[in-house]
Length: 391
Image (cartoon, helix red, strand yellow):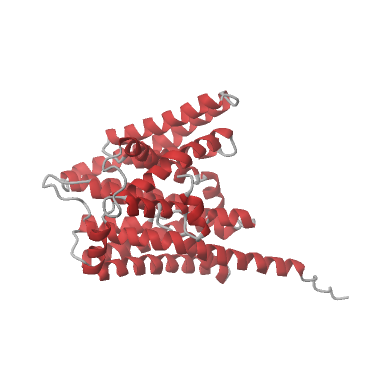
């Protein structure tokens, strides 16, 4: 955890991808030097998956979403529905049932803003196209995770109109309680104990735990609760020491353990065999994601009057499929029906793994190139002398 992320980033590979590779190389399908069932790492990993989604929720600012308004909603719909449709169509054509096909579409609809720190360093985070992209993530990730919850429930108990209607009502009510009630509780605790960092930390961990347990009560996955808890607490935690502390704890131990354990659980030989036997599915996933995300960014950016570079930057920001995608894939694969069949099979897991590797590597690289080009263009425009006024 100490060495691998830094070494990976020197080779332009995200640290989380490096941890997955190390877990893979040293796991049962590699050199087999790690214990088969590491109890401590497994416990850390289970907490890590909740914190991954909690951090994803923290990046979402509802105030920013309100500010950019209609353009954010338009982009959120486009970058959700286009990949969702493409992925669901691909899954259905490859022989998966409608429920599994929709789940496959939702997996590639969500995204992780891995390239956002690059924009922060270059001073481009406040540009409207960036704000629209960030705000669109709110809609996309929340809906994608709610689709996961519904698909999981249908796979476990079968399709029933009354049960599905009740599930949707429970999900909407639960989301409203977390976003409006828990957000006020978090704000109260942060304001009441501004100097008590230990109290703030315990309060945050309590909020994550309670939201995750309440999600399980209504048959939602705990990661949905952790994500909504992050959204609810994002405004209260912005700029506070408590946010910094919980990110340090998670990013030091729990989150690296989650990505490391993913690598350990991947059977490299079986993954390669699945890719060899089903190359069209893996290639289709890549094309569906890249094409649908590009079409969403280009169309909304063009209608909004953004430059070509801004449209390309919006596309690159929505490419990485990491946090929510990996967590949702793991949950879907672990979900079995009464016949013992998983919601998605190993072919889908292998294809998603390839997608994660490609997008987590190339997404930030493309964001860096487009952002630098935007920065250079703005610098050159600022350096140009103002036009002479007519006398």
